[in-house]
Image 1 (cartoon, rainbow, N blue to C red):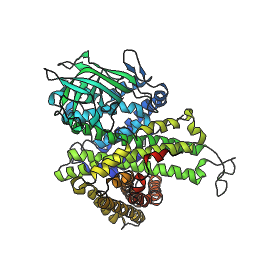
Image 2 (image 1 turned 135 degrees about the horizontal axis):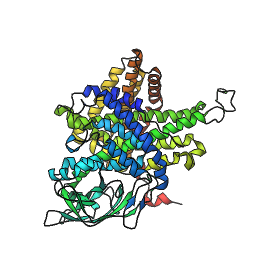
Image 3 (image 1 turned 120 degrees about the vertical axis):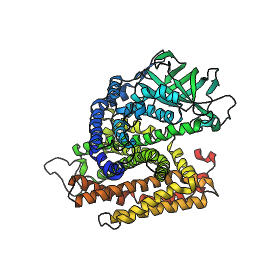
Image 4 (image 1 turned 135 degrees about the vertical axis):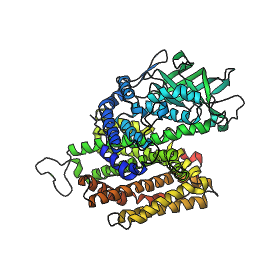
Length: 600
């Protein structure tokens, strides 16, 4: 059976030494994030997910959701009771505004808890996760009346929320949507159309579900410029806040998926459902991106979270399983065989998983800090810097985080050998669950194109230049410390590869845009490599400083330094190969005629 222990000590280390919560105590909302409070969130939150949610993970996978004849959906056994405990404990309210019943904690603190929740049960975590995306859009684009009507019970978790974007004929290209919104005399709209792949579209966890739906009004341009956003409740809400009649929206079917079986992924039918415009007409794309950006960061966190659980189980298995002998001679002569841990290739797989998982945790939490600073920092310059950084890093966290998450899940499965392919060990579920994260909320190829096609050139390249400056300055400082000089030198070389690749795009992308498209994924991974390298430099610097001062857990700090060395020697060199792939251009990618792809 799988097991999971929330990595509280590592999270605490990152919050203190990479994010630097104490250095931001003057930022609005951060004063409440005292060390004792944050420790309580991590410890108690970790205990809740480990004891309540994790035992339901395999249940949810094996039982799945059930749609009934009346269109209602029942979640797997135990989910409804677990959700009740989740709501009563207030875990979903951590970073929500106090005005609507939230605790107004920093987003970075709630992100740490969300990682644990996803690791314990990704399918369950998606229910409140989708609601948070809808809340984010309503907070920014909703009217005061809409906020007052929907947000308090969405924040509390009494009501759920969804994002309804995709249709059978369109996914990434939302300009192709056909769902219509007909204006009514009372100011409402009649919404008619079909949406697919709607996570948490229908379920029995809440009394109401607040759908945010993209649709086009009469006469709107037949493109993405004609999209509007509407709030469409599953059950109508009366003026006094009580629930009224059922709206004309229903679950037509549940998708039969590769993974995340515990989450109800629905085909949603809108048959003249009553909805209300959110924000301005034909400005739905801007509102959608508020949801999408929140969701993309959350999906990047899913990659990390599933990787963490898979990695933990692979470590336990490698410590217990005996196969063969160490290449240097029997490690335990009294046993018939040594454990898997003596084999260099098993060590390689586990070290790669450890290095990426801990690095991505730091990157996700540092990214969450930028979300906080974008909205709460004291000066306009600080807010702009944070907005630039998180805008640049959102597609990287989503794309690299989920690519590496899936890679680590399959690597962990590989450690198990044949047992990893067998259902009872649980590893194949992590592989299946991790796979979707590379696809939804914009495939990773789309993330890469967002990075190189939009984010690089935005504001004259201000965001990427800021990242270059931060990495360059910290590399220069770390070279003066013998404990981090080698890592800094290697990270500096990787930064140079990224800078050269950026210049190559500038010189060649305009004359042939296919050069940009062909190199986009490699550039996304190169950016992720450098950004994660920055996180490891900070962790290594902190570990070396604490060790020299005789503070902290010596074994934990030594492990950080060894893992940082592994990242520097075994992972950072990939930067050169990624640059060479980018500079290979698009010619060979685009040269082969279509008919030759299936030349038999």
